[in-house]
Image 1: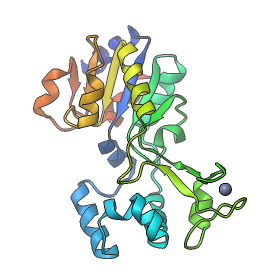
Image 2: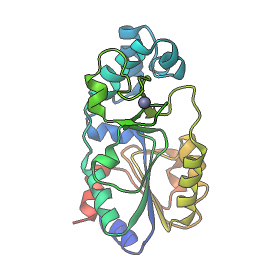
Image 3: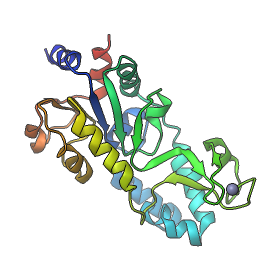
Length: 241
Ligand SMILES: [Zn+2]
């Protein structure tokens, strides 16, 4: 039985690193199963692609449009963490999961109560004034008309997210690679090994418990030590029972 085997592997581990992929957003109410649909809808509505809208140059040169997109499309999603994220938080409380690495910007791990989360692309929960460093919650961004301004120094606040055209923070990538190199088990959730970043990070793993849990089969699955083809929300909560 797959669950029993997974339970056993987790039982034997003391330093599990979990990697969550963006397909997990589907479990959390994200309306676009396929990213292509989202691109088409956004382009028809705004006249620009999501990458153009959520870019550093749009923030600098057309901030009103940038923040309209941020409010109406990014913050508006109202995603809530699926059972998968709560199971991860529970495994962290039990001392099994030590680090969670994510590329999602929606702060779902944090919302579910996970503590040690490396958010490689930042999070919508952290909006920051680039001048004085004051942080602002999502509610402040949602309430603001047009361009949100810092109450202390009147600078335009920015989302604490890596925008299109910006580099990922190398320190975070190094931190993620370090966590994986020290892990006794790596749990890849909702994604396969094809994405560049996952592949790059997995290289640092040296042990024999690379586990994938995701719905669709992929030819790279054979590089994992164990693979369960199902939605993580159907599997992970059972492990903590
Ligand atoms: Zn400020």
